[in-house]
Image (tube, rainbow, N blue to C red; front, top):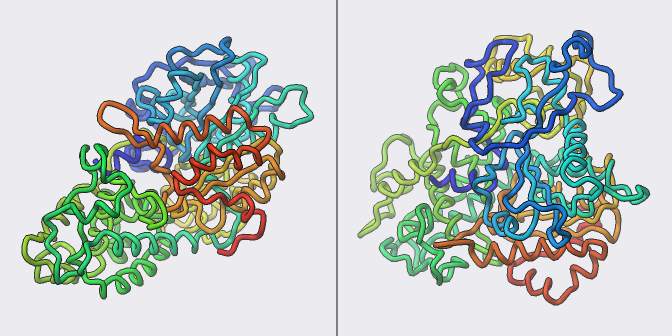
Length: 588
């Protein structure tokens, strides 16, 4: 359940429940599964696959078959949605992934608070979920972020008429869409800009050459921070692992009802004191070595998790990574999402249990000669004594690190990810660091054998446009002046390598921007999804209040940052205001 807590909280980043390449025909994607599409009933808006005036490719006879050139955009409005009520803010949410879809029946606590007093709009991007396209791969050419921008504008006109979005809240890949929408429809010279403010969480910026290496460094550093942090005083000589008292000074929420109330929250077993400190560097070094190897062959741990059953029968995978089980790759993926405990930041129990689980799985897989066997006499559990049962905690960790189905579109993940220049896996295995063309993908997949055969087969599923240029995403090409609040976690591996800082400095204009860094948080910014028995936590309420304050008065960002109440929130959330520092080149 540990991974599911994070996936359901935001539904932003990864996929595991979509159809595999083996289940798809060579030229068609499958119909969206019920788990992907969701059970919530959407409202549909019929739209053209191309903007008005654009010429359809050869083979699309729109006059004779108009349905072949249209699709239904699925969108969702919260209960009480009333654009005529000027006291209600109109907020659009754009999910990340690409491919992730929010379940409007189970929004995260922050959005749940907003639904009671504001108008929230969610949608499934074209080709995903209930906004399905024809499964023929020829239709992949209509899945581009520019077309999603036009879909959003058509949606705004449909439900708001002449009124603009008060805010667009976007996460991860969604920040790409929001940035390009603001660049086109938020221009001050327009009589009435179509969007008043942006809140961009985990903003990605893929053109920076060192971001991949920075991700590896951050993942390994996150592991080391977890390994060092969750241990009682006195070291292994006084380690008993029977009390959660040691957690009280370590967890922000240890003193109230949030700690230990729900499944997967921190408990007395989350004490790593029996792990030898001397093993830490060895494991970290091994981790730093294996991550680039995974990227070289498969692009990311995500590819391995999503296709592990098939890879168990792949000779190249068995040769290089056969000693590792599925829980190991899920643990790596988890470390890329959740962040790490920072003594100067917020450390919540809802994150801590899974962080410990991920660390234990990695320790067992990298520090023992036989990962399948666990005994207290085997390093790294040799220091376990008394009432410590490291092997029992490891068994629980391995169960925690099992993937769960989530509502993610594999088609959306692959097609938008590749052509919008956001995904890492394909450029990594193709060894492309800059721009390349669709024909380069064709050439890559044409070599059907070798150690990269599996990834070539994955890439074959994407509808390829040979002449189309594919470049790493650079927000500076869509610079705009819409007031923007950027949010990032200091331990976020997805935007490591100064991506948020570069986005801030080169994608936005002066005096209408702010960058808030949440110390210790990862890509999911878990502070936004905290709950307590019977409702939303105080932390989520304060987080929603912080964002709402920005949305209501976005025109004077400097005044927002120096407001006494906001300064109090900055202190409460352990935020580092990077607005001034980020104007200078970032040291990666």
